[in-house]
Length: 231
Ligand code: CTP
Ligand code: CA
Figure 1 (cartoon, rainbow, N blue to C red):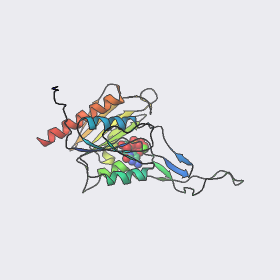
Figure 2 (cartoon, helix red, strand yellow):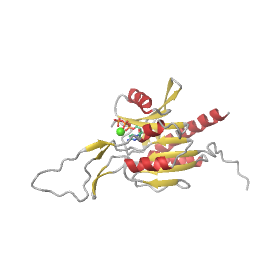
Figure 3 (cartoon, rainbow, N blue to C red):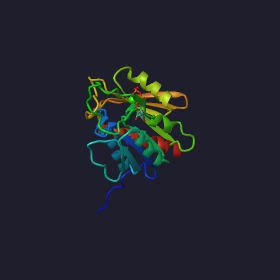
Figure 4 (cartoon, protein in one colour):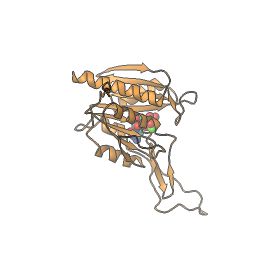
């Protein structure tokens, strides 16, 4: 049987993706989490794999099965996620879709916290490392294309633009998670692709799409940018 050749615009490219929430332990039986399902990051991994890329997916705890043909590294906490991301470099393209917990518990209990007459245990929080900013600011092993996500409930474009500048990445996928639109964990996303080329910033607004469609569209943009650069 003769089949037309499948286009593989990302053949030979190594794509590193983060996905899902992180879990930050409070004690051996409890943790702080968020509502991320991991669906968007997993869909991007599948789309990049289908486009011919070698894909490494670093995922927090999710209820999804590993996409076929993708190397998946499962982690729990933000610090473990950073470690696995660093261990997966170099990469040609890095896409940070994970909803990394901003804080972890500083005084993590070695034993299960117990109710005592002294009242409720105080939870002290410390900031987690910013994986996207850390990788964007690398001098040696910075991937040539670094893409972040910004989930916002208000001032979407403005917040995303300042995130792009602050983190030092090349593109931001700004994701409207206000209750009226794309609520976290749902199947659809309302996104705007904000890109920076030198000092010029472009905003490309997409119609409401499923997470699979967003993934395919994003991978198509990545493929176009990679092809444009190599000619
Ligand atoms: N991110 C990350 N590591 C963190 C926090 C965020 O890699 N510790 C990444 C996310 O994966 C996403 C981007 O940074 O690609 C933006 O995440 P977001 O939570 O929107 O930004 P923050 O800088 O944490 O700001 P805030 O939550 O206050 O809006
Ligand atoms: Ca955050």
